[in-house]
Length: 157
Image 1 (tube, one colour):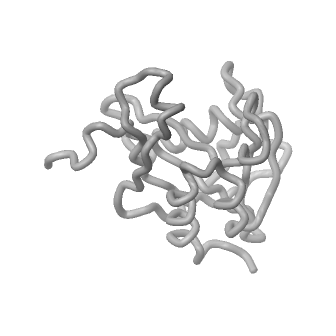
Image 2: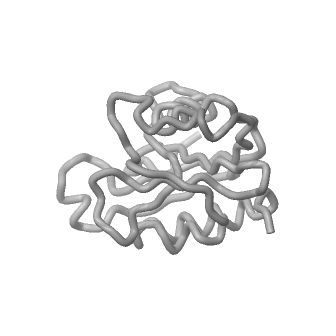
């Protein structure tokens, strides 16, 4: 199969739902306000299974291991990097993402933002799914709107 997005970095994202249907949002470390809240996400290693990559990223960024599969997006969700991000170097035009909805089966005390040597988030909170697109950096907003639509059925009231 031919890759329709060869210039986009393969990436996975996780929307973690608690038992009230709220989602986990992290405030990115070293990122200025106001658009610095996001879901866990990260790159896919060469040959890595997408679901395995999602579980790895979730654990690295949040410490969470207690999660069950709820669903995933069918196709890649793609966004372009703005010029100021693309100018930092790299060969990618943007990112292509597959998103996974997971149900959190642990306790909040399991969440450890320092679980990995590279800390991604400096704070976290549970929020409504429909809040997420307004809290993400604008160039990712359309992708987050697609994710929110795809996973609306898992969200609480």
